[in-house]
Length: 346
Image 1 (spheres, rainbow, N blue to C red):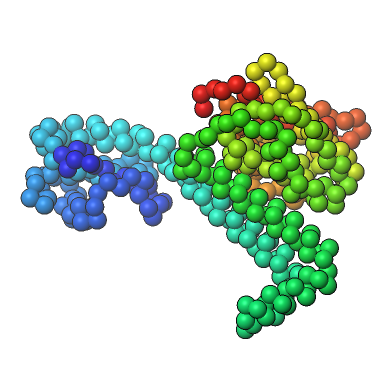
Image 2: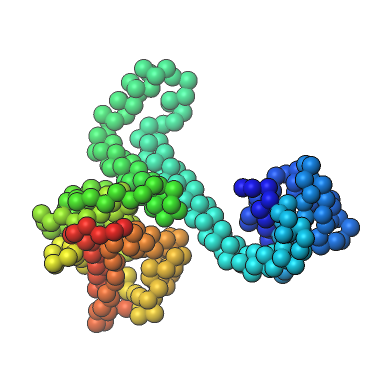
Protein backbone atom coordinates (compact mmCIF):
# COMPACT_ATOMS: atom_id res chain seq x y z
CA UNK A 1 0.00 0.00 0.00
CA UNK A 2 1.28 3.51 -0.87
CA UNK A 3 2.70 5.56 2.01
CA UNK A 4 0.52 8.47 0.77
CA UNK A 5 -2.72 6.49 1.09
CA UNK A 6 -4.76 6.63 4.28
CA UNK A 7 -3.79 3.64 6.41
CA UNK A 8 -5.78 2.51 9.44
CA UNK A 9 -5.38 0.79 12.79
CA UNK A 10 -8.94 -0.08 13.89
CA UNK A 11 -9.56 -1.59 17.32
CA UNK A 12 -12.43 -2.68 19.57
CA UNK A 13 -12.09 -2.11 23.31
CA UNK A 14 -12.72 -5.72 24.34
CA UNK A 15 -10.33 -7.27 21.81
CA UNK A 16 -6.62 -7.86 22.18
CA UNK A 17 -6.07 -8.00 18.42
CA UNK A 18 -6.99 -5.13 16.04
CA UNK A 19 -9.78 -5.48 13.49
CA UNK A 20 -7.65 -3.76 10.86
CA UNK A 21 -3.91 -3.15 11.19
CA UNK A 22 -2.20 -1.39 8.27
CA UNK A 23 0.48 0.33 10.37
CA UNK A 24 3.87 -1.06 11.27
CA UNK A 25 4.69 -1.44 14.95
CA UNK A 26 7.03 1.57 14.83
CA UNK A 27 4.41 3.70 13.03
CA UNK A 28 1.77 2.76 15.61
CA UNK A 29 4.11 3.56 18.48
CA UNK A 30 5.10 6.94 16.96
CA UNK A 31 1.43 7.81 16.34
CA UNK A 32 0.41 6.92 19.88
CA UNK A 33 3.25 8.98 21.34
CA UNK A 34 2.43 11.96 19.09
CA UNK A 35 -1.17 12.03 20.33
CA UNK A 36 -0.35 11.22 23.95
CA UNK A 37 -1.16 14.73 25.13
CA UNK A 38 -4.77 14.38 24.00
CA UNK A 39 -4.78 15.91 20.52
CA UNK A 40 -6.95 14.20 17.93
CA UNK A 41 -4.68 15.06 14.98
CA UNK A 42 -1.13 16.15 14.40
CA UNK A 43 1.36 16.51 11.58
CA UNK A 44 4.80 15.03 12.27
CA UNK A 45 7.92 13.92 10.51
CA UNK A 46 7.70 10.17 10.15
CA UNK A 47 10.60 8.40 8.46
CA UNK A 48 11.49 11.60 6.61
CA UNK A 49 7.95 12.29 5.37
CA UNK A 50 5.41 14.84 6.58
CA UNK A 51 2.58 12.68 7.84
CA UNK A 52 -0.78 13.46 9.37
CA UNK A 53 -1.75 11.19 12.24
CA UNK A 54 -5.37 11.31 13.37
CA UNK A 55 -7.28 9.47 16.07
CA UNK A 56 -11.04 9.12 16.50
CA UNK A 57 -13.27 7.00 18.75
CA UNK A 58 -16.93 6.07 18.83
CA UNK A 59 -18.49 3.72 21.36
CA UNK A 60 -16.34 0.60 21.69
CA UNK A 61 -14.23 1.38 18.63
CA UNK A 62 -11.13 3.49 18.03
CA UNK A 63 -9.15 4.20 14.91
CA UNK A 64 -5.74 5.76 14.26
CA UNK A 65 -4.91 6.81 10.69
CA UNK A 66 -1.75 7.88 8.91
CA UNK A 67 -1.36 9.58 5.54
CA UNK A 68 1.26 11.63 3.69
CA UNK A 69 -1.21 12.54 0.94
CA UNK A 70 -1.14 16.29 0.24
CA UNK A 71 -4.94 16.67 0.33
CA UNK A 72 -5.09 15.00 3.73
CA UNK A 73 -2.18 17.04 5.04
CA UNK A 74 -4.09 20.20 4.12
CA UNK A 75 -7.56 19.11 5.23
CA UNK A 76 -8.16 17.37 8.54
CA UNK A 77 -11.91 17.40 7.81
CA UNK A 78 -11.32 15.06 4.85
CA UNK A 79 -9.50 12.59 7.12
CA UNK A 80 -12.18 12.81 9.79
CA UNK A 81 -14.92 12.02 7.28
CA UNK A 82 -13.00 8.92 6.24
CA UNK A 83 -12.51 7.86 9.85
CA UNK A 84 -16.22 8.34 10.53
CA UNK A 85 -16.92 5.91 7.69
CA UNK A 86 -14.43 3.42 9.15
CA UNK A 87 -16.04 3.66 12.58
CA UNK A 88 -19.52 3.28 11.05
CA UNK A 89 -18.35 0.06 9.40
CA UNK A 90 -16.57 -1.21 12.52
CA UNK A 91 -19.54 -3.17 14.01
CA UNK A 92 -19.96 -5.08 10.74
CA UNK A 93 -16.23 -5.74 10.53
CA UNK A 94 -16.27 -6.99 14.14
CA UNK A 95 -19.23 -9.29 13.46
CA UNK A 96 -17.56 -10.78 10.38
CA UNK A 97 -14.26 -11.18 12.21
CA UNK A 98 -15.84 -12.92 15.18
CA UNK A 99 -17.83 -15.20 12.89
CA UNK A 100 -14.66 -16.36 11.14
CA UNK A 101 -12.85 -16.76 14.47
CA UNK A 102 -15.75 -18.75 15.88
CA UNK A 103 -15.61 -21.12 12.93
CA UNK A 104 -11.88 -21.49 13.37
CA UNK A 105 -12.26 -22.25 17.08
CA UNK A 106 -15.04 -24.73 16.33
CA UNK A 107 -12.90 -26.42 13.69
CA UNK A 108 -10.03 -26.83 16.15
CA UNK A 109 -12.38 -28.11 18.86
CA UNK A 110 -14.00 -30.63 16.52
CA UNK A 111 -10.68 -31.86 15.16
CA UNK A 112 -9.32 -32.29 18.68
CA UNK A 113 -12.43 -34.28 19.59
CA UNK A 114 -12.12 -36.49 16.50
CA UNK A 115 -8.41 -37.06 17.15
CA UNK A 116 -9.16 -38.06 20.74
CA UNK A 117 -11.81 -40.53 19.56
CA UNK A 118 -9.37 -42.04 17.06
CA UNK A 119 -6.77 -42.54 19.77
CA UNK A 120 -9.40 -44.13 22.02
CA UNK A 121 -10.20 -46.67 19.31
CA UNK A 122 -6.52 -47.56 18.94
CA UNK A 123 -5.81 -47.82 22.65
CA UNK A 124 -8.96 -49.88 23.21
CA UNK A 125 -7.22 -52.52 21.08
CA UNK A 126 -3.66 -52.16 22.32
CA UNK A 127 -2.25 -50.92 25.62
CA UNK A 128 -0.32 -47.70 25.24
CA UNK A 129 2.09 -48.66 28.01
CA UNK A 130 2.98 -51.83 26.09
CA UNK A 131 4.22 -49.72 23.17
CA UNK A 132 6.50 -47.48 25.21
CA UNK A 133 10.16 -48.45 25.11
CA UNK A 134 9.70 -51.11 22.45
CA UNK A 135 11.45 -51.10 19.10
CA UNK A 136 9.37 -50.67 15.93
CA UNK A 137 9.58 -54.43 15.24
CA UNK A 138 8.48 -55.25 18.79
CA UNK A 139 5.56 -52.82 18.55
CA UNK A 140 4.39 -54.40 15.29
CA UNK A 141 4.64 -57.88 16.79
CA UNK A 142 2.67 -56.86 19.87
CA UNK A 143 -0.07 -55.17 17.81
CA UNK A 144 -0.35 -58.21 15.52
CA UNK A 145 -0.98 -60.46 18.53
CA UNK A 146 -3.61 -58.12 19.98
CA UNK A 147 -5.47 -57.89 16.68
CA UNK A 148 -5.33 -61.66 16.17
CA UNK A 149 -6.81 -62.13 19.64
CA UNK A 150 -9.94 -60.17 18.73
CA UNK A 151 -10.29 -59.62 15.00
CA UNK A 152 -13.92 -58.50 15.28
CA UNK A 153 -12.99 -55.67 17.64
CA UNK A 154 -10.09 -54.72 15.35
CA UNK A 155 -12.40 -54.60 12.33
CA UNK A 156 -14.89 -52.44 14.22
CA UNK A 157 -12.12 -50.10 15.35
CA UNK A 158 -10.93 -49.84 11.76
CA UNK A 159 -14.40 -48.74 10.62
CA UNK A 160 -14.67 -46.23 13.47
CA UNK A 161 -11.26 -44.77 12.62
CA UNK A 162 -12.33 -44.41 8.98
CA UNK A 163 -15.47 -42.59 10.15
CA UNK A 164 -13.40 -40.23 12.29
CA UNK A 165 -11.13 -39.54 9.34
CA UNK A 166 -14.24 -38.87 7.26
CA UNK A 167 -15.33 -36.36 9.89
CA UNK A 168 -11.95 -34.64 9.69
CA UNK A 169 -12.15 -34.48 5.91
CA UNK A 170 -15.66 -33.03 6.07
CA UNK A 171 -14.62 -30.40 8.63
CA UNK A 172 -11.59 -29.36 6.59
CA UNK A 173 -13.54 -29.27 3.32
CA UNK A 174 -16.34 -27.18 4.81
CA UNK A 175 -13.97 -24.75 6.52
CA UNK A 176 -11.74 -24.27 3.48
CA UNK A 177 -14.64 -23.95 1.06
CA UNK A 178 -16.69 -21.50 3.12
CA UNK A 179 -13.71 -19.43 4.24
CA UNK A 180 -12.49 -19.10 0.66
CA UNK A 181 -9.17 -20.72 1.48
CA UNK A 182 -9.65 -23.93 -0.45
CA UNK A 183 -9.37 -22.51 -3.95
CA UNK A 184 -12.09 -22.54 -6.58
CA UNK A 185 -14.70 -25.26 -6.68
CA UNK A 186 -14.23 -27.90 -9.36
CA UNK A 187 -17.72 -28.85 -10.55
CA UNK A 188 -17.65 -31.98 -12.70
CA UNK A 189 -20.05 -34.79 -13.53
CA UNK A 190 -20.08 -37.43 -10.79
CA UNK A 191 -22.05 -40.54 -9.92
CA UNK A 192 -24.67 -39.73 -7.28
CA UNK A 193 -24.67 -43.29 -5.96
CA UNK A 194 -20.89 -43.27 -5.56
CA UNK A 195 -20.75 -40.16 -3.41
CA UNK A 196 -23.67 -41.42 -1.30
CA UNK A 197 -22.09 -44.81 -0.66
CA UNK A 198 -18.66 -43.33 0.03
CA UNK A 199 -20.27 -41.67 3.03
CA UNK A 200 -22.88 -44.21 4.09
CA UNK A 201 -20.50 -47.15 4.57
CA UNK A 202 -18.88 -45.19 7.41
CA UNK A 203 -22.19 -45.08 9.32
CA UNK A 204 -23.72 -48.49 8.73
CA UNK A 205 -22.36 -49.62 12.11
CA UNK A 206 -24.12 -46.75 13.86
CA UNK A 207 -27.40 -47.50 12.10
CA UNK A 208 -27.06 -51.21 12.95
CA UNK A 209 -26.42 -50.37 16.60
CA UNK A 210 -29.64 -48.34 16.71
CA UNK A 211 -31.58 -50.94 14.69
CA UNK A 212 -32.15 -48.41 11.92
CA UNK A 213 -32.53 -49.96 8.48
CA UNK A 214 -30.60 -47.61 6.20
CA UNK A 215 -31.20 -48.23 2.51
CA UNK A 216 -29.65 -46.30 -0.36
CA UNK A 217 -31.64 -47.18 -3.45
CA UNK A 218 -29.41 -47.87 -6.49
CA UNK A 219 -29.23 -45.20 -9.16
CA UNK A 220 -27.25 -44.60 -12.34
CA UNK A 221 -27.90 -40.87 -12.26
CA UNK A 222 -25.10 -38.32 -12.41
CA UNK A 223 -25.02 -34.65 -11.42
CA UNK A 224 -22.68 -31.68 -11.67
CA UNK A 225 -20.94 -30.85 -8.38
CA UNK A 226 -17.61 -30.31 -6.68
CA UNK A 227 -16.84 -33.71 -5.19
CA UNK A 228 -15.08 -32.74 -1.95
CA UNK A 229 -17.60 -30.13 -0.85
CA UNK A 230 -20.59 -32.35 -1.73
CA UNK A 231 -18.97 -35.31 0.06
CA UNK A 232 -18.77 -33.07 3.15
CA UNK A 233 -22.39 -31.96 2.71
CA UNK A 234 -23.67 -35.55 2.57
CA UNK A 235 -21.44 -36.51 5.49
CA UNK A 236 -23.18 -33.88 7.66
CA UNK A 237 -26.62 -35.07 6.50
CA UNK A 238 -25.91 -38.73 7.22
CA UNK A 239 -24.27 -37.91 10.54
CA UNK A 240 -27.41 -35.99 11.48
CA UNK A 241 -29.58 -38.98 10.53
CA UNK A 242 -27.41 -41.42 12.50
CA UNK A 243 -27.78 -39.29 15.65
CA UNK A 244 -31.49 -38.51 15.51
CA UNK A 245 -33.20 -41.41 13.68
CA UNK A 246 -35.79 -43.30 15.69
CA UNK A 247 -34.44 -46.68 16.90
CA UNK A 248 -35.99 -49.53 14.94
CA UNK A 249 -37.08 -47.29 12.07
CA UNK A 250 -35.96 -46.94 8.45
CA UNK A 251 -33.91 -44.41 6.52
CA UNK A 252 -34.51 -44.50 2.78
CA UNK A 253 -32.45 -42.51 0.29
CA UNK A 254 -33.93 -42.29 -3.19
CA UNK A 255 -32.92 -40.41 -6.31
CA UNK A 256 -35.11 -38.99 -9.08
CA UNK A 257 -34.28 -36.95 -12.15
CA UNK A 258 -36.11 -33.97 -13.57
CA UNK A 259 -35.26 -31.96 -16.67
CA UNK A 260 -32.56 -29.82 -15.04
CA UNK A 261 -31.82 -31.36 -11.66
CA UNK A 262 -31.27 -34.50 -9.63
CA UNK A 263 -33.46 -34.80 -6.54
CA UNK A 264 -32.12 -36.86 -3.62
CA UNK A 265 -34.55 -37.57 -0.79
CA UNK A 266 -33.49 -38.64 2.70
CA UNK A 267 -36.71 -39.94 4.30
CA UNK A 268 -36.68 -41.05 7.92
CA UNK A 269 -38.40 -41.06 11.26
CA UNK A 270 -36.32 -38.81 13.49
CA UNK A 271 -36.65 -36.40 16.39
CA UNK A 272 -39.69 -34.16 16.05
CA UNK A 273 -39.02 -30.69 14.65
CA UNK A 274 -41.65 -28.06 15.39
CA UNK A 275 -42.84 -25.58 12.76
CA UNK A 276 -40.84 -22.81 14.45
CA UNK A 277 -37.72 -24.98 14.52
CA UNK A 278 -38.23 -26.06 10.91
CA UNK A 279 -37.68 -22.46 9.82
CA UNK A 280 -34.41 -22.27 11.78
CA UNK A 281 -32.97 -25.76 11.39
CA UNK A 282 -30.39 -24.62 8.83
CA UNK A 283 -29.30 -21.58 10.84
CA UNK A 284 -25.76 -21.53 12.16
CA UNK A 285 -25.54 -22.60 15.81
CA UNK A 286 -29.18 -23.78 16.11
CA UNK A 287 -30.11 -27.04 17.85
CA UNK A 288 -33.64 -28.39 18.27
CA UNK A 289 -35.37 -28.53 21.64
CA UNK A 290 -35.65 -32.32 21.77
CA UNK A 291 -32.06 -32.83 20.65
CA UNK A 292 -30.88 -30.45 23.37
CA UNK A 293 -33.10 -32.06 26.00
CA UNK A 294 -31.69 -35.49 25.17
CA UNK A 295 -28.13 -34.08 25.11
CA UNK A 296 -27.65 -35.30 21.55
CA UNK A 297 -27.08 -31.85 20.15
CA UNK A 298 -23.69 -30.73 18.98
CA UNK A 299 -22.65 -27.21 18.03
CA UNK A 300 -25.63 -26.76 15.70
CA UNK A 301 -23.38 -26.44 12.68
CA UNK A 302 -23.83 -29.63 10.61
CA UNK A 303 -27.05 -28.77 8.79
CA UNK A 304 -25.96 -25.17 8.35
CA UNK A 305 -22.76 -26.33 6.65
CA UNK A 306 -24.67 -28.87 4.57
CA UNK A 307 -26.95 -26.20 3.14
CA UNK A 308 -24.14 -23.69 2.55
CA UNK A 309 -22.12 -26.30 0.67
CA UNK A 310 -25.20 -27.21 -1.36
CA UNK A 311 -25.80 -23.60 -2.34
CA UNK A 312 -22.19 -23.27 -3.48
CA UNK A 313 -22.86 -26.21 -5.80
CA UNK A 314 -25.90 -24.45 -7.32
CA UNK A 315 -28.22 -26.83 -5.45
CA UNK A 316 -30.85 -26.59 -2.74
CA UNK A 317 -31.42 -28.32 0.59
CA UNK A 318 -34.85 -28.27 2.23
CA UNK A 319 -36.70 -30.04 5.03
CA UNK A 320 -40.28 -31.28 5.17
CA UNK A 321 -41.51 -32.36 8.60
CA UNK A 322 -44.77 -34.27 9.18
CA UNK A 323 -45.74 -35.01 12.77
CA UNK A 324 -46.95 -38.54 13.36
CA UNK A 325 -50.22 -39.02 15.29
CA UNK A 326 -49.76 -39.94 18.96
CA UNK A 327 -45.98 -39.53 18.79
CA UNK A 328 -44.60 -36.55 20.69
CA UNK A 329 -40.99 -37.54 20.19
CA UNK A 330 -40.56 -38.45 16.50
CA UNK A 331 -41.90 -37.31 13.15
CA UNK A 332 -41.55 -38.20 9.48
CA UNK A 333 -38.80 -35.93 8.25
CA UNK A 334 -37.56 -35.64 4.68
CA UNK A 335 -34.46 -33.75 3.65
CA UNK A 336 -34.44 -33.01 -0.06
CA UNK A 337 -31.17 -32.24 -1.81
CA UNK A 338 -31.18 -31.06 -5.42
CA UNK A 339 -28.15 -30.80 -7.71
CA UNK A 340 -27.90 -29.59 -11.31
CA UNK A 341 -27.58 -32.08 -14.16
CA UNK A 342 -26.35 -29.44 -16.58
CA UNK A 343 -23.40 -27.12 -16.05
CA UNK A 344 -24.17 -23.83 -14.34
CA UNK A 345 -21.97 -20.97 -13.23
CA UNK A 346 -20.71 -21.70 -9.69
